[in-house]
Picture (cartoon, rainbow, N blue to C red):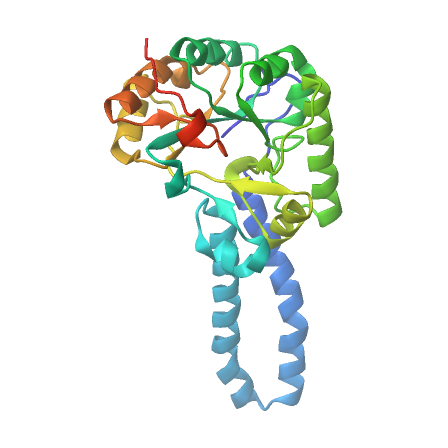
Amino acid sequence: MKDTPSLWQGEGPEPNPVVRIIAIRTAQTTALTAPVLVSLAIFLPPSGFWRVIPWIGGLVSAGLSAYFGATFHARSPLFSWLSGKNGEFLSRLPPSEGDVVAVTFDDGPHPETTPRLLDLLAEAQVTATFFLVGERVSRYPKIVRRIADEGHTIGLHGLHHRTMVLQSASEIRADLGEARRRVEQATGKALPTPLLLRPPYGFKTPILGRVAARLGCRIVAWSVDPRDYDEVTAATLVKRVAEKVAPGSIVLLHERPGAGTSVEALPRLLALFQERGLRCARIGENAARSARKVNPR
């Protein structure tokens, strides 16, 4: 999920978001805990103070662990638990969709990769779901229009490819609103509801869940991640998908300029799905009516 400045012109790479988030949230928690410790040191005798320190440390560690688990793990039930009614997200297609698989692409559009993917999908007569970055949409509106015109579903992947974990509710709302506006301007039509949202890196927080729910967004994760953002061959990518794909799987792929593994592997992936009796469907598509059988190259 790394961006290269020379490939994504005008966008610098984001510093390691995991390290940054852990450092900031740990510092914030420490700042909140310090006054409590000072108060306890004032009102408790030394022996009592030192007895409660391990308990406080354990509670803080458990809380941070739960928060980080809910934030970083794409399918963690902790997110739903911490977010309550706003914690629903999709990581697999519902059983009612039948023997289907959803192919999804993140990080686009890009002129080196997206047209090639669209050509392959058109040749196989299948549709996919594209999670697009708002500022890249503005750069390549004709490609976005083609995605929509050829029957694919478009979801939001943020305005910039930057983690939303450290954003406030108002910042997230503005980010998603502008990303949506740019997509709709490029396609000339309103995005269907519920809006599909895949946060950058898949990182989620209760604040994001609450804002997404209010904006009518459905958060989409994945069940199969072949890690195409690593330096892997197409054969390895196909092998990784083959080991995990099953009816209802949502497969995570990326539009990575300069690394055409997903483009090279796509025909073989589509053939794999056909061999296993799986149909390709867009997220939210009723497979019984609309999913098309794969016609591999």
